[in-house]
Length: 180
Image 1 (cartoon, helix red, strand yellow):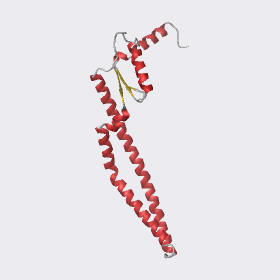
Image 2 (cartoon, rainbow, N blue to C red; image 1 turned 60 degrees about the horizontal axis):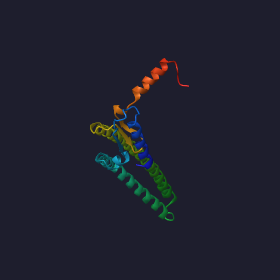
Image 3 (cartoon, helix red, strand yellow; image 1 turned 135 degrees about the vertical axis):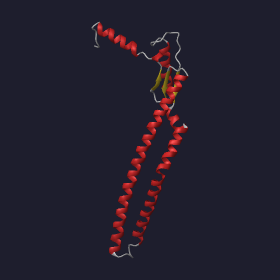
Image 4 (cartoon, rainbow, N blue to C red; image 1 turned 120 degrees about the horizontal axis):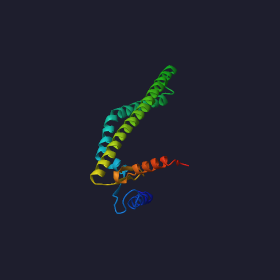
């Protein structure tokens, strides 16, 4: 976590405990969580990565095999320049072009499918991690959990000032003074 993030968190905690909607004597329990570290080190994240590798390994092997065959065709074309008839050369070039086009298409589809599945897995993992952080925060009586990326992951009712703001807005609306 950066110094700025720690400073912002400390200032927020100090502000809240000094009267930002709470009694001055009430302490606020604040925690910080690193989602990047959770995504790197959590066993669920590692299992997800392994599952993706296993799921896409057959297609990756197929692509490597196709690439090797294309290299072989290309070498045959280069080696056979003086030895092949014009018809043989055209046939081999057409075969190479067709296989190259199919390979490029399969490679693009593979990359798109892998990216889509990786995003699906990441989304599910992020939802699970957020839920875990919130459950832990409640169980450990935290009032506020801040992500190292700067967002608030959990806030207890003790630090929620929404109702006070709504009351102030209602009072302002009833007195006829709106936002200038």
